[in-house]
Image (cartoon, rainbow over all chains, first blue to last red; front, side, top):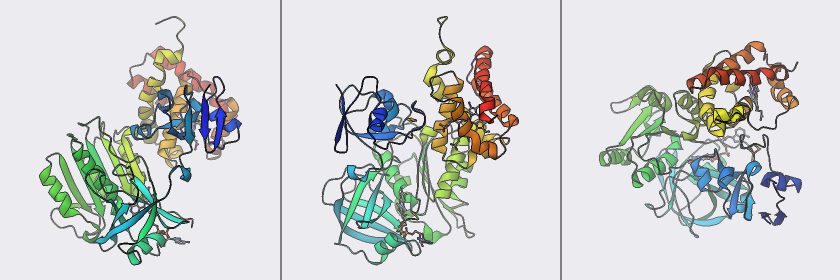
Length: 326
Length: 124
Ligand SMILES: Cc1cc2nc3c(=O)[nH]c(=O)nc-3n(C[C@H](O)[C@H](O)[C@H](O)COP(=O)(O)OP(=O)(O)OC[C@H]3O[C@@H](n4cnc5c(N)ncnc54)[C@H](O)[C@@H]3O)c2cc1C
Ligand code: HEM
Ligand code: FES
């Protein structure tokens, strides 16, 4: 007999019953729609045990690796411990010491954090950083776990932004903060090393991309890797020296800084990052895309990339949605 | 192939749905007659719904009733969804299958399944 562990409860799974039915019958509020493995609204994560392969059909590789599954088509033959994906409690808060704070440009702060407990993450995922227990924000990881000692964040200061303002104004090296995570499926997975990669970011959207590029190169990716980083003016770009160094070091890596404002000096592309990218690489069939930063850019670029031939499952994105709630 | 193989099996089952979804969704988004209905939604969720649609049209397993089709498209009927849009969707569906090299006989069966939902989709 198979038992489903959810939160503090143990439920016996009926014969031919799906994990979804088992949980909803007992009043657990798992969302669902199609009940046929197609719509993915019933996405859950196994925190103990391995979900059957059939329940992971159609999920991105990165989600599969993290044991996500679709509850409505999940018929495990062994016990499973499950959680809803947005269930904060599956990840405990970890204290972290601020090691350094360095301005990368006038509005973006590089934050290095040393976690007090080991944290397993992929470059490009994000953590939630808490100013106090009720006020947390997501920041993407620019560091690569096997290359960098600390967690690296690029925090853009927003006008009147609570957490970003606090990070820029008040946070000091040596101080301790709490982080939760990591989360997110915007990261590099090996296995298709010759595939071309296009990475497009605006503003601090470079953070995950800087991690992903170095992770891909570090894991021996051989296909072409094109990074487009966009900003209105020169002031908004950063890490240009480091990225030009990588270009010199790796023949398959290409870096295109893009400026959408008026003044475009030699060596920079003129236009918005995603427009420049799709001009330079008009046919995206069989390419893998990473889109990070401004939500409008991510939305438009996702649509354009798809229409230019990229497969939906090859488009990885993090829209830096700014929360409107408190 | 056996005599009893269902339409869904003859088309190739879930693998066929997966092969068709990107092509079909791309056609729908590029079709000026109907793209507006699909523009302002979360693309990933929308793609999953396209899969549900294709599974249904391919004669595959699903749990949608006629009533589900009515309620599911009611907000679109309010925005002016009519016969010409259903025609366009069925056209794109057929073109997708043709692109995948499916026989005309099977394409006609798929079109007939989609056609059979017309009144429900349009809330008549
Ligand atoms: C997956 C993900 C990854 C992210 N990664 C990064 C990253 O790597 N780097 C990064 O810099 N950011 C990132 N973000 C964004 C980040 O999480 C925060 O949303 C951002 O830093 C703003 O938080 P804040 O507390 O400073 O601003 P908030 O206090 O939340 O305010 C945000 C903006 O809204 C305005 N505002 C707030 N409340 C009101 C109101 N009542 N009326 C009018 N205006 C209001 C503020 O003036 C401000 O400009 C990411 C977001 C997501 C979802
Ligand atoms: C031809 C017959 C049709 C069938 C069998 C069909 C089937 C479906 C199915 C199964 C879903 C998923 C429902 C869900 O799980 O939420 C759906 C959603 C949708 N359909 Fe159709 N459909 C048809 C025609 C159309 C047409 C003609 C249009 C518009 C031109 C359309 C636009 C949509 C949209 C926009 C959604 C998503 C609704 C939302 O959640 O916002 N459909 N359809
Ligand atoms: S309810 Fe749609 S995938 Fe499970």
